[in-house]
Image 1: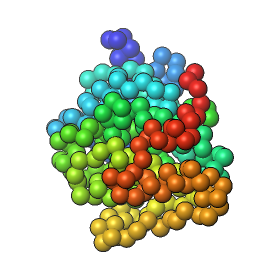
Image 2 (image 1 turned 90 degrees about the vertical axis):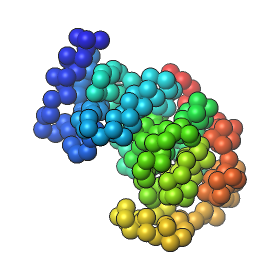
Image 3 (image 1 turned 180 degrees about the vertical axis):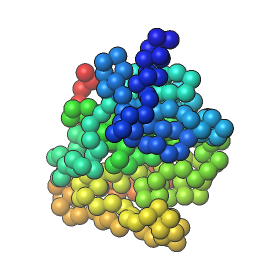
Amino acid sequence: MAAGRRDLTVACAPVAGDVLRDTGPVLVYRAVVAGEPAVIKRLTGTEDAIARRRFEREGRFARLLAHPSLPRLLGEGEDWIAFEALDERISKTRRAGPAGARPLLAGLADALAFIHARGVVHRDIKPAHVLFRGERPVLVDFGIAGTPEDDLQQAELSGTPAWMAPEQLSGGPALPSADIWSFSALGLFLLTGEKPYTGEAETVLRLRRAGAAPAFRMPAWIEQGDPALAGLLKAGLGSAADRPAASDFVRVLGRGWSAP
């Protein structure tokens, strides 16, 4: 691992066009690791105790959570984690209609059921965090993931205002049901192209705290064309206690693609 880390340190050196995120305590780069395209996260804000704990936890999750619809871990060190490079975001390749959305949602639901069964909650499901390995959707970025009893979830409001479950807005513990709300919103986005809320983060937070309902509605053509999926998505956007589990989506949708 030591030699690999020396190579990775060189690969992480900032190169024009290779920096994906250059602000905040965790920088993100493109690089090549052992001949394979990679995305590297590097912790630079070592004085930020919360950022360090989140970074260490993301590395731990990456080691423990191996699934065909989760990113492969290529290597890690004290202040870096390397993941496989994946293809464009789902927001650029939206599939329309139940037939196209079903296999995408099936693979993601299977990944969600997998992490939930291991006590992990993603907490930031949205189109930008779904990439592709070929045709297979992959749920990425466990930077703010946690467990229901994790005290970091009360340390600060984390998530994307337009896509987080209502209960996340209060900063309370995020349970697997919170992921289901975001996953259901993602499902409607795949089917209709509509986002639950639009605008800058502060504007969305203000609207949601004032009780604004999501902007999208379940179109009749979805309810008629795929009533089972429509019913799950509607329930997934309901109250936390009444939301289906990820395994319910897997039962209705299947598992998407077989493991390679």
